[in-house]
Length: 345
Image 1: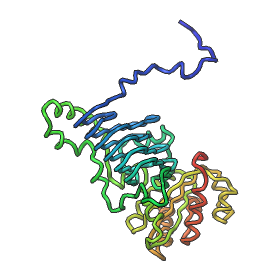
Image 2: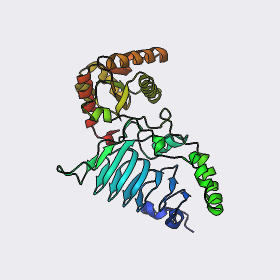
Image 3: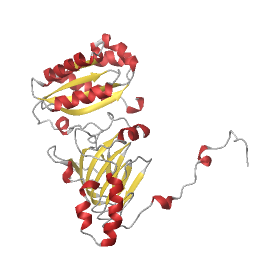
Image 4: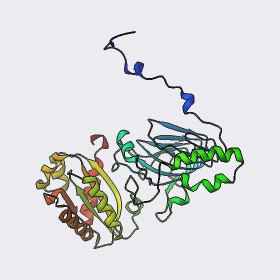
């Protein structure tokens, strides 16, 4: 037995040996699993992992972390990840929060929508996985197979579409499981009880990742204007950002894009044209929220909500939360802020 460790030892040589068979479930039918199914199944993994590949699945609902999807059909996926990639698949509905732009290749009939999920441990799992809640997107799609002469291979789920029509959580599956044969019913019931103890919810107001309505940003024919709210780093900045989002949503003002990065003094001065804000850049990452709302009203509504928050929370200095009310200026600033790579966060 060695009493010391050679400094030249490689880290991967010290890792605990893991039997991959413990993490593989295949060829399941009519099942509720904790890992990977074959078809007609529901998969719930309430944890984060480094990488997941989903192969050759059909008619499945999958809730997971970072994934690559291949050879799948008629599946619904809910995932948060560094990168989301779909290959050789069709008829996929993907509720995603992806740090990099989602990628599709030789695939068709792919519908994208914003990630929407909550359970108590999820925010800590995001942090452990290195995912920032405000640096996730679902709408900047890169299609390797795009052809100018062909219909688009992807679209966005209508904003009015309820996620509960597409995603069923464990608490919703008991009636379906009870109709199966006795062996399947008992086995699945035991799994369901463990999964239900996680207390997952699809409630939009509770979603760990703030829901963005990017379609309002992409569709140039939608009526309305834009405003920008920038929250420089301060105590409870994430809570304050969520409060602004929630309050404005009750006034028909919708979040369309988010960002969280630390910018330099020069960046802030150049983007906002106000050198008095530059010193705030030293405090830490800045959260920026772009909103869409009624023409002539959205900027005023954002300013009113922010002013009330600053007053109630006694936020000092008051310039720690900045509002750009002019629509064109807000859009230009949001584009400039989004230009910086998230690796700087």
